[in-house]
Length: 270
Ligand SMILES: C[S@@+](CC[C@H](N)C(=O)[O-])C[C@H]1O[C@@H](n2cnc3c(N)ncnc32)[C@H](O)[C@@H]1O
Figure 1 (spheres, rainbow, N blue to C red):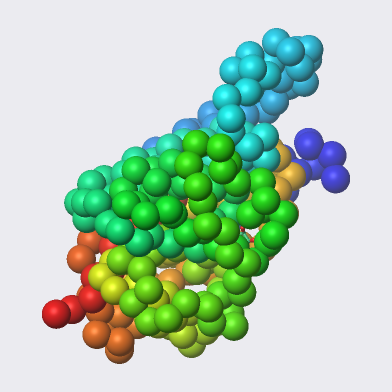
Figure 2: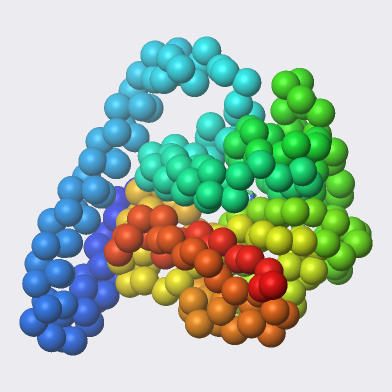
């Protein structure tokens, strides 16, 4: 589909969504009046930036990218534009959470993906960091030069191949929103908490209409047609923790009012 058609579809979708919001009352209507011009500005801005990028020779488009700095090129491609902002905010929150928990001997990052949190986690892990993912390709792409990494291929759905309380902390980022069924989410959370002695850091998505709006914009400007993320209420997270004797000690929104993602620190009780 051409960019202009995608843009037209997105515009109609946005208008429908905003009209539905406005019908819910004056408060919502004022938010719509404020957000709509901003959303339009975002769309037009993204179109202009992508047109300029295409017009420039690749060597001029982004000198820092061309220079390379040890970051996997797939990460640089994935976390551009608004995703780059979310990535930076996520890293900042993870940094703040890790400062709160302090140095820990055994840390697991699962799924590690292309290792966005590897450097931050290495800073707190006293022993070599353990990274796990179902994708061998991703594990092989992880940066091992700076310090040793223990890579393990796992399928979270089948259970983790570690004994109970094998780690002091575990990080599970951008995984739960791929799981549509709440019972499966609860089982996965229980498995994550089983292998950690004390802390689990998870990210999850809680429903937000503005997030849905930004996804529509993203589809219009980038042609991104992945299925929407599975949303989970914070009460569901609390209930899943409570079931296995854990509690939520911190729950932060990554980009309040705009993005659905939240980061929670879970701790074993007692
Ligand atoms: C969106 S990425 C998130 C990666 C990383 N946590 C981050 O935030 O950058 C999702 C990752 O989950 C991995 N994955 C998908 N299904 C999995 C499973 N059943 N068990 C383990 N990893 C899985 C994928 O290979 C991918 O690397």
